[in-house]
Length: 107
Length: 122
Image 1 (cartoon, rainbow over the protein chains, first blue to last red):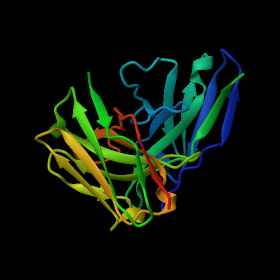
Image 2 (cartoon, each protein chain N blue to C red):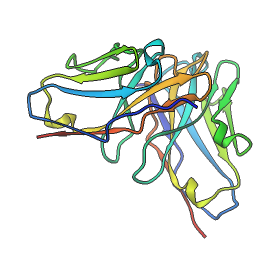
Image 3 (cartoon, rainbow over the protein chains, first blue to last red):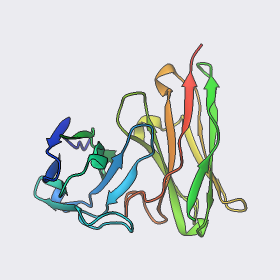
Image 4 (cartoon, helix red, strand yellow):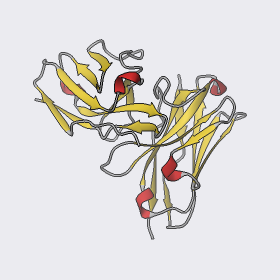
């Protein structure tokens, strides 16, 4: 079965750049989506198909995907960016799979 | 506005079934699909399955095959998820989310319901 590996936590200083990785075998050949989830709320799609931003998502959010690692980058991090972030792909052996999630802390 | 509104919280005994509804509004229901995702307390997201509101095709997570059924009622723009033979580890918040009509995880889940808490306890 296909697995996605994310770091449990990432910390970033206010105003700096946060990078959250999502590792998977040849993930660069798949479409990766990213979600933000704040406590007590439903997830929100922040990046789809590797690097596309849905309407209403700030340009500070960007994504890339190559080889065995996809990356969500949050520039000029704000306190309101504190949340859990999940990557997601579709794989023929597993169907839809989510990464385990990364807790972003803004210091 | 585009939204998905789910039914209310449920408390069930082990072995029972639960059926959660997800009513869509603000868009053409049959042009999209619906995925169901659950989240156990303090845990991550788990995909349960997907249904196309266009043609009724389904795709279920292997782990839940045989226990889950997803349906749609296009006359009321409502999707349903039924989970049978409930166990304590089915206790979770259950979400519906809008997806592409042709296949799950094609363009990501861009609209989510508010979540339905299902508690399984004797």
